[in-house]
Structures are given as C-alpha cells and as structure tokens.
Image (cartoon, rainbow, N blue to C red; front, side):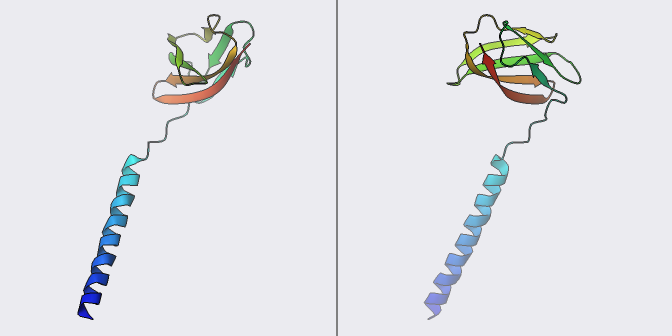
Length: 112
C-alpha cells in the first residue's frame, strides 16, 4: 500500500513539473505583438494603373516587401514618398508587408 502512495505521489509531482515546464516554454515562444502603423492607407486597391500609394500618420520612410500567393518574395524596396511603382508585377493577388520604424503591417493587394 505504501508503494501505491509513493507511485501516485511521484506521478502527480512529475505531471505537475511537466505541466509547469510546458507553460513556461509556451510563454517564451509567444511572439511579441507587432506595433501597428497608425493611419495606414494603401490605395487604390485593386491597382489598375501600375502605381499604389501608401500613406500613414507619420509618413516616414517605409520598407516594402511584396509576396505572391505562394509566399515567394517578388519585390523588396524602400520608399520615402507615398508612391510605389508596381508596373513590373503581373496581374494577380499579392501580400504587401510594410515596415515603418518599429511598426509593421500586412495587407492583401490586387494588381489588375
């Protein structure tokens, strides 16, 4: 009977340790929330004339990365004005990632 109490206590202690370890790992692996870009506007969408305009409250220099629907990077550039020339992109659906200082935003972008 003493063996049963020993094994039960041992198993409970082990599961408690395992549970707390898993919770610590989950807490450490959670990504930090990205800061959003205040007042971000991406227009026109869909893009029909080969140009898209990207503006924000601060209108600082932006790092632009565009991915196709398969996740392949098709464009990476820096802009200091609002205008981005997309005439080299074929028509399709894209994901545009915009970085401004420490803030990041992603949007769906359609090029016609």
